[in-house]
Image (cartoon, rainbow, N blue to C red):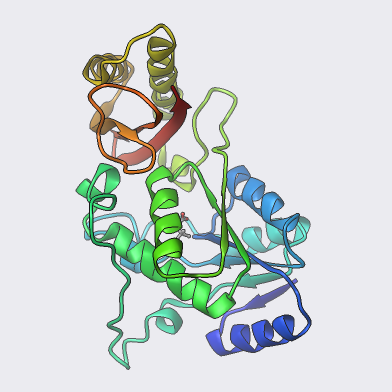
Length: 284
Ligand code: PAF
């Protein structure tokens, strides 16, 4: 396994791989890899000849005051995990390499319309512009045939698929399922921030989604009622502040009053200072 940190070295490698006719797979990450990332790596591993994992904590997707500086990083551990999982190349550029300030970096990818302004986008202005920009840059540098993202970032998955379609990237996008702890908490690098007490409370997030699922399975179709029940459950379960709970159409991401079709129930909450997100998809 090679670790490459220069864009020009990655590009020469890609030219060679393409000449050999290799199918290239990419799993973009911000590092501090956990079982969720490993599950995406395993999906990608089966779909390609050469598997690249990118590790880059992307500053442009953090809003002012968010956790860019304290975001956990552990390259040695990530390298060991990737090597054990049969990854061929880690692409781990520096911030300066991706956004050179000497040349005055100024090109960004953005999306007009409704899917970036709702859910997390409403509370993290500029976040998805940062995500789309870095993902487009990684796609241009690595030229993958297939790229794998996680359903845990449900809105990101929808936006990336739309970007790939609208900008004609010849890339097959695969969305891997959310991986959970045995008590239901979705795996996230940010779970590391939780205190022991908060960690005990955290499964209430997934339980609230299961509560919603049960209500729907029992015939409830009024989104307001379901959201109300979820909110009460979460607030009564610990040191939570709810940022949003929403039930949206899976394709348009617009809020539904009456639940039908393919839907995503999504939420973002603060547990103490830590912001956690989760979602489930249901077909009604
Ligand atoms: O999902 C993530 O970890 C990040 O948003 C991504 C896709 C690696 C872009 O920085």
